[in-house]
Length: 205
Image (tube, rainbow, N blue to C red; front, side, top):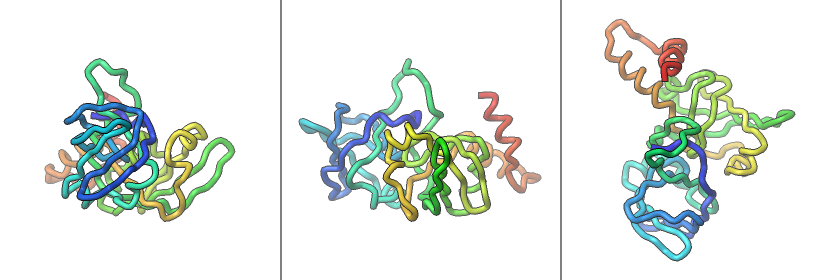
């Protein structure tokens, strides 16, 4: 499990034969789980200045592989007793979103991201979402996507400062929204998810 708070921006050394080698300050152990751009991967090799993770077939089919170059976000899995911040992130990327537009604000930057329609039922106004491993709050939802407002600190400390229109990003929707959707889909009288229902369940936690 992860929190969506980025530990470091690591440098990609190579990506070949389904193995990604990174240069990083963080020192994991073989078998550790590390989220790379939001995807939970297993450490399979260590080097003097970094480590190697392996990407399974399913992972490669879901994530934005073109972003495995330059800098990437990394976050080690939570340990028992760690301070919990951000929100509950599994490291299971649901889909890839596309940045449609970017608008500067007085104290932040708005990013408008579209996602495939089948995932929009899990995107909730003022709910949580993970974009390339970063825990964020959804400010507004439309039929095709959602709007985020990124503060200057996050722009500096993550890859958001390098994103442009057309950039594809890994999306993990809210865990509780997915659970609620699964429950409601099994009820004969449930035809769609209502945001108010999901927000009430989230408030319990």
